[in-house]
Length: 484
Image 1 (cartoon, rainbow, N blue to C red):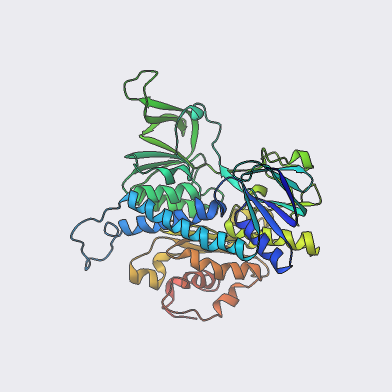
Image 2: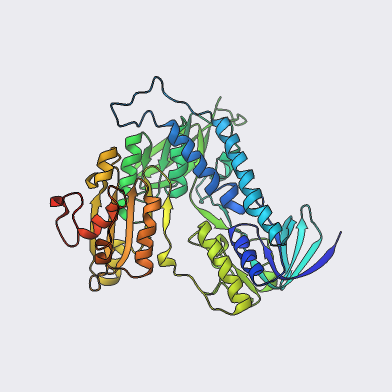
């Protein structure tokens, strides 16, 4: 049944950006409504992203504890095993609890009306639910926010469209894992899922197009992670020029069901064929911008399908804003939330707030963890023609040596004249937590001496950041544990 309702703010999407927007709108006593299009309420992070993957990483890490135990004093009577079905059941229970407590209950608290179904912009700031539970509903706002997120993207490789493959979303539905998986991609999704699957018993091969994994990050990080993965037993092949993907049929017949896959590629000029029982495509995401009526209301997109916005998240329609993955990188839950918050401030308060993306940390939750913020060595070299950088190895950090967890490194990039820290890049245990000190340093222009002059607790992994700063001032190889 068709009905129309008016609000101050209407939102297309139901993830992090949308919920940050209704939180800020509530603070301003604005009426809000959202059409939750696509994934269940909460969007990517809670349903198929951060929450399930980090839970399963922890499950897999516990399963691998015996094989990776570095202490002779600790023995295990038998190797632990991971029940994948039970792990998925636990993940689903966790997701449902997060969804209810952090999204459904929050929307109710802020008195936000939620419409379920596929929504389209049909007339300026009016959204119509064209399919789903609330089909026929029209909601109109003084302003509208598009926050439809992103979906897994598959590259144009010959034959790929004719092959069944997993993504980071569909793998969560698979309760009977194959014995081996070939993974296309070498970004954070590929590394996190590659390690999860390897540690629950799947033979994993990672194929990356560029010359290293984590190619968008500081080069040392990708090289260190490839070394760590290969040491763990995960095969990593870089420098691929993919030619074709094809199925392997059980009886060779045209009508046979898929019993395996083959990836035909060229590496260093040599042709190779990599086979496995299944394929996992982890080559990035694409903006969910098609089929939602953008052209009807004058909202333009970029060539990569992301919505075009200015620094204040306003689209080419002045009454419509956009936030989150739908506007492009960095596709992070916390960034989406900040963008959604700022969009409301700009739309209703004309505050002109924006985000300094150079001070946004990126994290890969593998073991060891990867974390980075700010400028890389290469970026600094390209801009200034010189670089003042120092790197320390985790094996030289007292805490890492004490607990026999020495994989990794920390690199600091500072301004060659002012000594301000402009970039920090690390691989190692607890890097995801350590990066926040570095983020504050980059955000507020702290110098290496500011970090050196700050007393750090001993012994901690976070001392690695201080040691990297000290390396600008002294030879750290001749330094006692607590030297200042």
